[in-house]
Image (cartoon, rainbow, N blue to C red; front, side):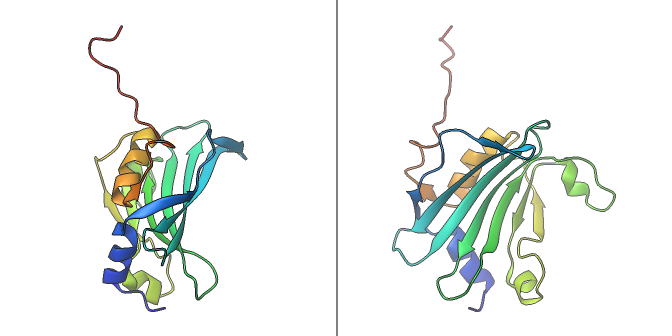
Length: 157
């Protein structure tokens, strides 16, 4: 399959439904809390896996992502990751901010990590907010049953 930036944008933005729901809770695994779920484009043409990873000791170190699962070739293609500010780095200053990794046609064609394109965001500041942000960005519907948003009323005590 030839990946173009238009195809990547279509894959990220197409309306998706959850086909294999996430577990009710994040599960500990080697220092991280993890959860996976599967989604499919509404027309049934495209399949994806989604993941949530949160470091158990440093909750600001998290990643919520979308992998495309092509039907006609083996493996997955990482399309999108919403990451937290997982600490200073000598080369990558974006690590001190919440940031989004997105695949580009250029990185895929060069054999690089598809999601090497990085942009800093203020769209979320915690993994819970990142999940909600990710669900909207990846256009995943019927998510409120699996990822409820809880807001307290100003008048609740």
